[in-house]
Image 1 (tube, rainbow, N blue to C red):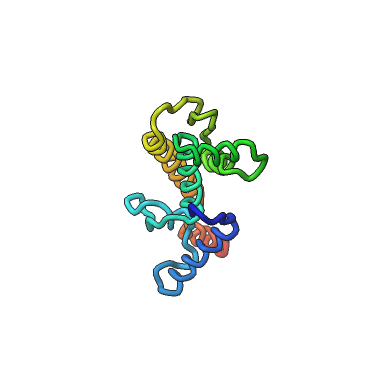
Image 2 (image 1 turned 90 degrees about the vertical axis):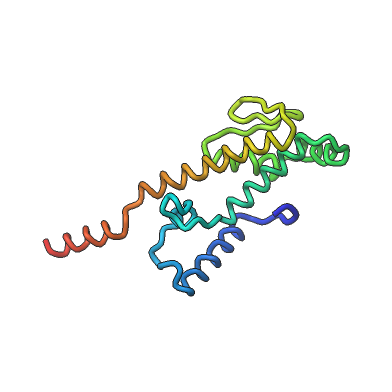
Length: 164
């Protein structure tokens, strides 16, 4: 994830391969909810990690590291990233946080999370950003799962409709 630029389509394909293998080994049913697969075990899920989320987390970590680094070579690479127009690591990190309804900005050598400047070294900054990212992803997944109709409810409703 650090070295290769992997597209979301490819990451989704990797997730599909994992799900297919789980189904083939009778560890997952055909009707299983994606949200439930990736929810933590203590919340009723399987506790797996999505490749897409791992990629977003890695890109965000790299952006925080590059932004806060004192190494002249990494600073030079960061300067190049800041002047690029599209598809930068900055855009990817910001997009990953936007999916969790949070804002992440990189201004000069500072990281702003929800408008609050994190003036710490890169590791403490990253830990705070990572915690917010994980919390947001988990919250979104939980909300989506709660909005879905359970298979047992669907079956019950269909059975009632058939007997009318």
